[in-house]
Image 1 (cartoon, helix red, strand yellow):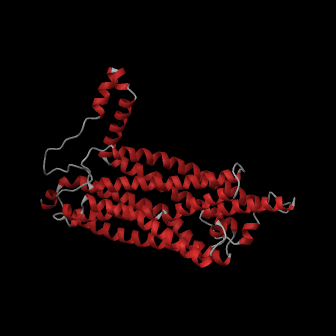
Image 2: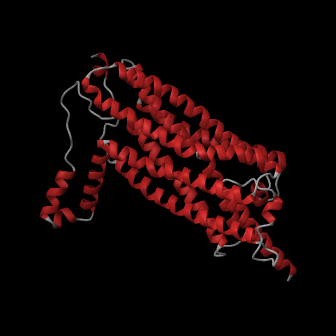
Image 3: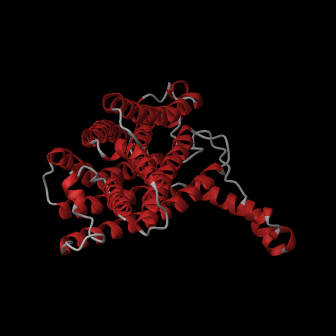
Length: 385
């Protein structure tokens, strides 16, 4: 009977630890964690119950928002893949942004979903908890990838304006694809190196010990993501200001499309800054307080949960930004719908629908060599004029 009770206590403690991990406040001390075990003890307080309810609320809300992000970015990715070729470098970067937002949303949805099944006692065992830890940790480190991809947009646009004559030679399809691979490779490198270093130093006995008893790893993780965020956004802002100044000097009226591109990039960059600054600031604060066990648990839970919810809004907003401002994206949506109608046989069964299918697949052709053939790419002729 005693061993069974100890198992229940361990299970509940582990589930609460995973909740802290998922909310980005995983650095709470062991004493704070044990105070959460209220449903197996008669000495629980109102504060303990409140903490548990906060965990449940933020976990469910994060899971719902992440699932919405999965649907949004999956549809966006399909629409982008249906843009008529040849693709410009901006298209490859945009596809990579949709893919990175999709992967991030999937990781968050899975990690919060697994934890919630543990909380409801629908799934039990150390393997399930370990899965929640791994997914949550991967989702946090994977925040690096969208940062790097967004920097790619700024660099690409900067080169298209400042190096117009050499742009086609510098920014090739191969180099853009290598940059996209580099974004994922660098993220994986940081993830593996940090875990490998900690494993060699501590040699934890099992997965639970590896993830739950390493506060200084989490501190390093917070600093890593925070420093990369500050470095990349600072460089992006400097390049964008130079880019904006360069475009302002071009007084031709035919640069309206280029201004639209700059505004689109500014919105993508601005949403990252707007949605991520609270979370990064909270991560730095937790990194300072957590190893010493400082700070009120409830305050950490609420602040961490709110800043994480704000952060999740970023992959939800990106599809609307480039979807509303990019004609090629809307054309890809129409081509995707037309293909779905064709696959289901609607075009053959309904003559009226057949006409719609033809209209949906109609392409916009540009014959003027001085006109932008793609709204997201500036031509050499425009700069020379």
